[in-house]
Image (cartoon, rainbow, N blue to C red; front, side, top):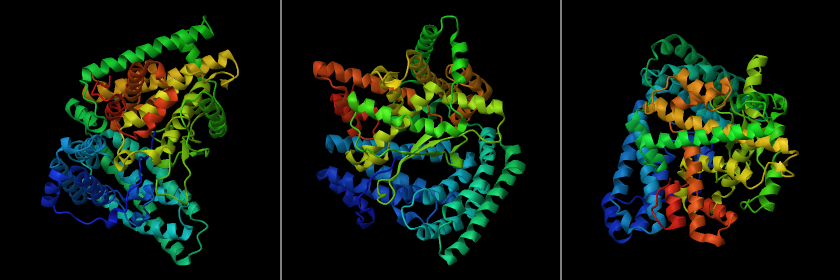
Length: 591
């Protein structure tokens, strides 16, 4: 899923420059102040500067007319800036920092090094053609998505951004060096939807504008974007695809480094793979047990096939999710699961076109600076109307009676949406912006299991009958097996540890071991070629479960589940390693 991790920042533009030498002198006497200054400076001079689209999404609308510099020279400028801040931060002695800033220091430093790994080693800007076409689509989407300003003002910002887009595809043609074939295939799969998005959705979003000059300018800039996208698609098909013979695999060294930088996890990969397989086999055994309870005459595969047919019609899917909210909220409050800071519910809508190839559902909250448009969007990918009846039915199997419950819990209550509602209480700028997916996705995946363990999905609490309760449990296990399959496939496909996997073999693994329909297996495998670390769902869930048990042991009879969850939320999006140290006061292993 997609979850934007944005934060409240101070008025960064008002900060004065401190020379590096002075910063080093300050670190000896005022390390906390020096670090606070440098972190603010980093967000102003690097983070939003090189990602103005993120600035727009955060609600910092001074960035609206700007667009990312996709040129090789622009990438190099970002690399240089990241190295400069790495050097500045490295001049601070973290032992001189108080506990919370010391943790934030490590989070920020790891994030910078993770970005450098992406730009200098993984080099997606040279390998992934979809990052250009979907990237510029997102840049316009964040302007049109929310009515944060009058439509004429947002239209003018969109025009300014659109005028910069054709040059992006000039740079893409220069930058792309032998992409993996699957990357170019994904970009081609999405391109028609992106063209349609600019032909239909973007004009519709600004249809109420009455600024004649802006509308005229928009007609020209939007037509130029459409033409640039069409030309890019034709070029990819005729030129890039035939020579797309690159390797998407990270390799063990890069995979381990990315995991350490992004998640603060340094478990050896062979041991990590054993952990993934153990959870996979545990969930398969539980699936078999529940299946037998439902109908002893059927195998788990037969029960799964029947469950796959128990889904809403595609045009009722969004409503099916909405219908879960009240029961989830009521259960959370009556059973004291976690504090829900707001009564406002998320808005359900169809997934934007540029996200449909690799995601089924996602939560898109507003940026913290948005004061005029604060809706959070629960996106759901509907089946393509051009699909055959069989393909549609296979796809909808992922939204069966059980998985609708687990997906709603994951995305909304008490998963991503509730964590978003806690954002104002996060302790620092860094905790709000720089997030570990083992925290964000781990929390949401943990909630799927935790809610059922606490009694949700039983008759009277989200289910009508014992049979429906068991089907809900099967759906939750099917989703857990999906995440287990990601865990195994990610490691094996990118590193070869445990035996290498080809793309067809990975798809088979999702079907046979992860209990997924073939269309879902295809989507999941595609995603894994670029989202190499998507083991973070299960990994994060297991880290949180261990943390909970360790806190229970420490607190004994005084342990309270709601207090534990609230305390976890207050730590923000930090890696679990950081949260463990705060809640347990030690450096014990995350697993």
